[in-house]
Image (cartoon, rainbow, N blue to C red):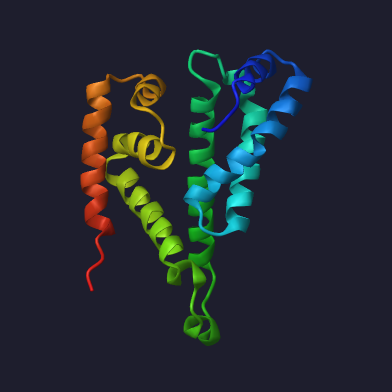
Length: 183
């Protein structure tokens, strides 16, 4: 994640119950958490909500951080999960709301933007992958979205490097089929 090295020390202190360290940690990681949330969610408001959720999760769950892996790796998981949860929530809300004629005819910027559309397509593909082959989701998210190194993924998931690479290959192969746009 682009976090300075002193963040690791703050995280260890915060995990041990140091409230001052937790406050400082949350302030310092906020910009990076927002940036990472924005990699998942195309609208800034949605990314900000997911980032707030992630920061709240960090504050609530920091005592579960044991320091066996890097804090930045642990944080990746929190941010990815919160961003994906926010997407599910937005999708569910959109499905529950009736569409008026005016809204149906108006272009939705979430799907008309090439960049935003591709991120939404990827989130949709991740949802499908989670339903069919959930063990493939984490390696794909960690490597292709969070851009973690293979060693960090191996450590975070507790599986051998060969298994990480195999699952990543399978996930990419599956998701690629769903992302291909047929004119």
